Image (cartoon, rainbow, N blue to C red; front, side, top):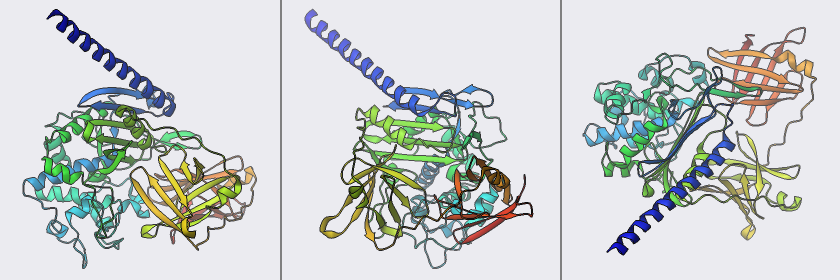
Length: 548
C-alpha cells in the first residue's frame, strides 16, 4: 500500500515539475518575443494569456504615459476600439433570446425612416457586415467631425443617405455604420442608452469594474494615454469624440476585465450555447463564398486550430484578442499607440501557449529572372487589384489604392510580407499565371490581367531650404488638418487620424503620394511661401489655408 502511495506521490511531483517547467518555458519565450516588440521607453502594451480561465502570463511593456514617465502596468485601461463590436453583437443576441429582436427583421422595423430603397436590410446583415450600407469611417467628411459630440440619431444622419456599396448579402465589407445602427436598435428596444445597457446587463453582472463606455471628460483610474507615430517620434493622439465610435468602438477596458468577458462567453453566462454558435458561425454570401466573420467575431485559426478573434483600432490605441474555443485559450494584447498593430504578435503569443509556435521562414535568393516572372497585375474577386512590381532586386506588392510593401521569397514561388502571416503563392500552370493571396485561414485567388502596373511618376529633387517653405498645418475642414513637415530633402504629410506619408515633388508646387493615389498642390505667394494647399484624392478635392 505504501508503495502505491509513493508511486502516486512521485507521479504528482513529476506532473507538477513538468507543469512548472512548461510555464517557465512559456514565460521565457513570451518575454523574449514581446521585449523585441515593445521598447521600454516608448508607448507599450499589456498582455494576458489564460487557459481554462487560469492566467498563464500577465505582463506589461513600455510606457503608459510618456510625458509623466509612467511605466505600463497590466491594470492599465485602454480604448479597445472595434473589440466593442463583440459586446454589441452579444447584446443583440440577448435581446433575440428575450424575443425583443429577430435576426431576420428588416431594420426599418426599428428605424422607420431609414432609406433602404428597394432593398431589405436585416439585423443579421448588420451583424456580419453584408448590409451594403456605406461605412461612415470610409467617408472623408467623417474626419472633419472627429471632435463633434453626436447623438446616435445625428450620427446615423451622417451616412444614411449615402449610396449603397452593394446589394445586401452579395458582398462582405467591414462596416462601422452597421454597428452604429445596432446600438441604436438596442436603445429603441430597451429604452435605455447603449452605455446604460452594457453597464447594467454586462459590466455590472460580470464585475467588470474597469470597463466603461468611453469618455475623455470622466476620471478613469489607470487610463493609459494614447499616441500616434510621427517621423520624429510619438505625439499625443488626435482628439476623437467617443460619441462617434459609439456601439462600433467606444468601450474602454483592461486585460483582466476582458478575460472575465471571454469566460462569460465560454460558459454561456450571457447567452445560450445556440446563440454563441450563431456568433461564431463563418457566414457565407449569396453565392456561397465564406466571409470569415460571424457576429462581432472574426473566424480564423492559430497554427491550424480554429480560433475566434477581433481587433480594434482607434486614435492612439490598437488592440487584438484571440480565443481558441477547443482549448479555452485566450490571448489579448492592448497597446497605446497606432502604427504597428498587435494582431500578428497576439497570434504568435497564442501559438506559443498552444505549444504550436509558428516556424520562422527564411528568405531564399532568387535570380532577377526568377523574380521578374511574377511581375504584373492580378485581379481578385470583387474587383480587387494587386500590382506586383520589381525594383532593385526585390518584388513589391500594392493593393490598388493602398501602400507599396516589399515581399520576400521563401521558395521559388512563395513570397512573404515581412513580420506578417500573409503570403503569395504564384503559379504558372497551363500557361495561366495566378497569385494565391493567403493570410492564415483567408485566401483569395487572383489571375494575371492585361492591366499594366501604373508607371511611377517622375520626381524632381528640391533643396531642403525650399521644402521648409511648405511646412505648417493646413485646415481643410474644422477638425481635419494636414500637417506638412520636412527632414532634409524629404517632405511629409500627415492628415488628422492617419499615418504620416512621404510626398514627392512633380513640380515646385505639386506633390504626390506613392502609397495611395493622392496629390497635394500648394498655393504659393510671391515669395514662394506656401499659403494653402489642395488635396486631390478619390475624385474629390479639398482645399485649406495654412494655420501655422
